Image (cartoon, rainbow, N blue to C red; front, side):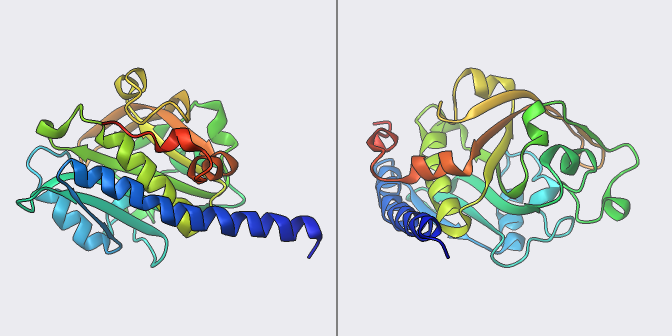
Length: 243
């Protein structure tokens, strides 16, 4: 191994350690809002939780084990509950291996949504991705999505706390080449997930007939290096959380 590789490996280990330590900051921020955070890895349990939320829409197939199984170590989810143990928010993440492919191809082939599109996709299902950067997103790619916040807790900075927490968990687990998400234009205009990431229209013009889902979402993304910089504790501004 070259000296440069030694230095890079050392820097990555340092950043991953810092990521784990800085999670405490976000856990404390959530606690100040009266929330207890849990991280889980069983997506059967996750689906049972999300189905019980009366105001949440269907969980997309990419987080449903009956449509797209997630191997051990390749996905996790986060929930927050209040003092009555009632769920206030949920979000999930999974790792895609897009070596030899790219995000645009994975979306349009419907492999992003289904482990076996030929078996599980409806004949009317389709996805169009026109975001130019999606063709450049390849390698180890982590997708964050399925965000839901209970109505009475909206507008209180929870998505930013969640985004900061998930970025750190994601980096500590996988140190990916890219992190991405899909979101409606309204969330981009309001900077719901912060201003540190890139935005591009045409991420996913989607129709999933079985679940009656139809979206026109923007692509949100960070490179692996940008993620590493965000989770490093030396970047103090990222730790200035909403009051």
